[in-house]
Image 1 (cartoon, rainbow, N blue to C red):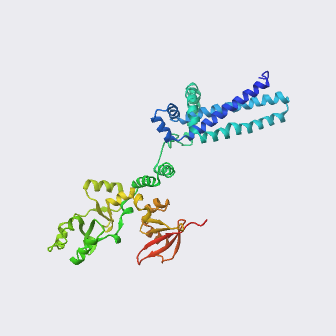
Image 2: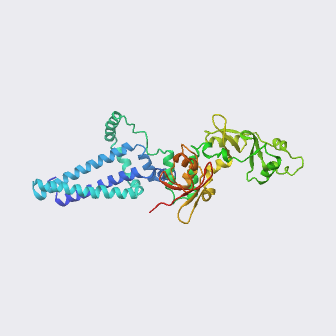
Image 3: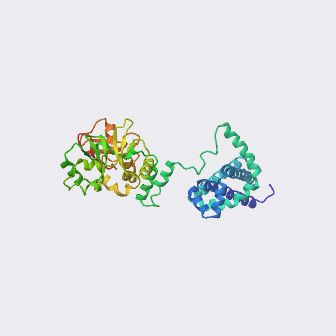
Length: 417
């Protein structure tokens, strides 16, 4: 190689640096390409995407080939740089060391950082091009790559690492939530929240979305017939629970559509109500929301009482509540959290923690209390007075309204800049 002209050596060195840049950039582009867009392009029969997809089925083979090629090129570049230094400065060890140092910086800039940055910005452009070259080369060097992988897999087994687990195309629920959360520019926010609601649908129980026991509106058969008639005529609900003294002694559910035509008749009495009642459905509090929706559908009912392990009524849930778990954001965002002119929010304290997390994009814990009211009371270990300020999981809140037993309205204070 000492007989090769300097111009040719410099040309060889430049070409090797270019090949090394190609290997480095293609490695980054192939490993960082969007796997879900890639699958979409494969379905569209994109030839480059198909080749990339096939290469990524065995990423260990691909990485072995790229690293082997890049290592060979760097060693070759180092040898050529040494020969150039010797030709220019004879056998001066200082100049040889300087040549190696300069080559290291040049390779770092032109064969590592620049191509990898470019590949990260435009992964598809380089990945599809590289796939056409790597596919035949992988077949050509298959014996060498297989031998290398035998040793690599042996070392991984010693370290008890299973390379086949956690492959690039695995996707859990949290990862899917992150993908949807980051897709703000691709879909309206209201649909984004709906999709997040569908994902939460699988983990929610009826206890998370039920109307609490103290807020259940019903008819007490122990009341006078005049009070009952007035309640029926002025009710904003389509169905009411009917009980004797306590909601734990529920008799059934009354559909107001059936009874409104009868309340004006002279012979209308409590027995007329009892004759129209539907049998009450009781739902264990830990029943998954999606399972209860299937039960409502199969039994052709749309309301039920939620009970604990002792059979005591804890709340009420309707089919509308289940649907609200998915699409409620389209309807209740403004009512649940009303933004004020100073940047603060007025929040109904009875809002569920799950809904508040979706509305405000928070991450409050959902394992404990189910409502904001319960979360604040548990945190402070008392029912705070009006005007009390509290910092709840990093959010500054002020109690605006309460009654004897619960908080009613909370103000979220704007963050200080």
